[in-house]
Amino acid sequence: MRYLPRWKGNTWSWVGISILALCALWWLVIGLVMVTAPRSIIDTIIFGILVSIVPAGLGVYCIIRGKQTEKTRIAKTRKRQDLKAQLSEDGIKYKILTGLQAIGVDAQIAKRGRAEEKTDEGSLGIIEVSDEPIRWVNVRQTESAEGRVCYHADFGIPDAKLKPDFPELKIRSVRQKKYFLFGQVVDLLWKGKDMDTGIISRLDSDSSIKKLIMESANVTVYSHRRYRCWTISPERLVTPSPALWDCYKVIAHYLLSSLLL
Image (cartoon, rainbow, N blue to C red; front, top):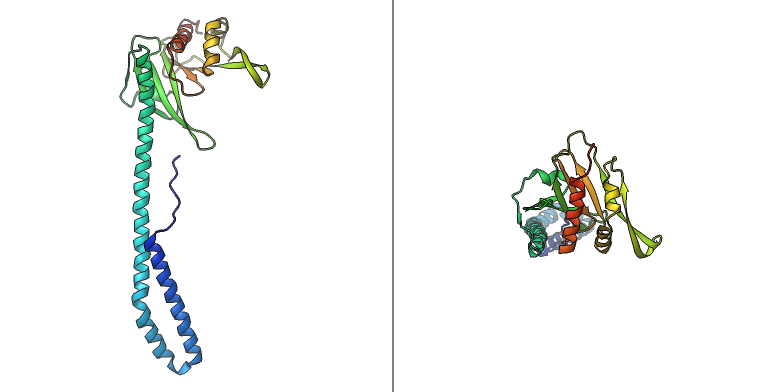
């Protein structure tokens, strides 16, 4: 969520308020005069109206002008924020794209509206990958409970074996520390229910995968039967190194070769 600055007023508004305050003070003086000289009440009221009508009108005009100016300022601020957000979102996609291209991956930005964008919320678009088991990357934006914007990259693996009746799987890596909640990370375990597909046992037996994920970020593997694909989702935004990209490809190979129900 993007926040606009609170209204702080402007010169036009404060001038209008000041003029109206002086008009109110003027009528207070007139009231005191009418109390002390009751015989001239009508003349005093007429005189007060003649003297205050122009300043009062000017004050109202200044306040209206101030509100219009404030609306214009808010509109410009919103436009700047939207432009900044768009540049930031595009920048994240191109950062991942150039990172993949730098390690020799044939990748390009896909047109918006791909079905894969719906595999999770907040999609900013798809990066299409050629000649790899990982065929696309879904770049996403989410918001934390504190209102902080977070970016993610989900690595997608199409799998025609995922039928509509296949259960939704969720398998995640969990780092094991030496002293329960603190200390050096000494091991990596895979948790979840793989529905007897053998995925967890194969991941657990691969020490090279463990080492690379322990050094980067935990991942969660999801199956998406509706879109007939798997996703490998790191817990934070990751631009893969050559070794980490190979690690994700190994995971993709295990997923594609798993014994599905």
